[in-house]
Length: 130
Image (tube, rainbow, N blue to C red):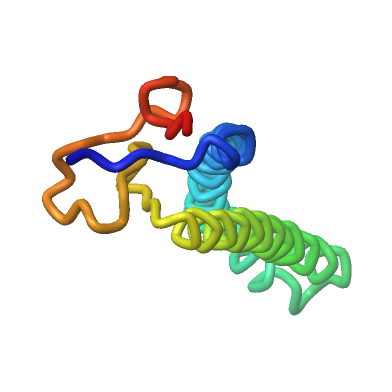
């Protein structure tokens, strides 16, 4: 016998499913931004300017500015990625409280270990009408 979702939770499940999809896209974008910020090689120019800083305060300020820009971008992108990750975990806990789980972008019942029966929260046949 197949399991059905509660009709009373239909609106909440659909809204949180949409929210999860938006957060998943946002999380992927923020993780890409974090990877790009870490891969930025502006700190190398800062090191080169630091060599010239021995002779000039201007080069010392320029090197500090380049290091500041690099670390600012890394920290801001890390905070954004961490925030979206926490929001996803919160929604995962909510879905677990309803005996549901996500595998990637697909919703399943928690006890569906083989992941054979994906759920479509917008399909009326998934809900218990009684």
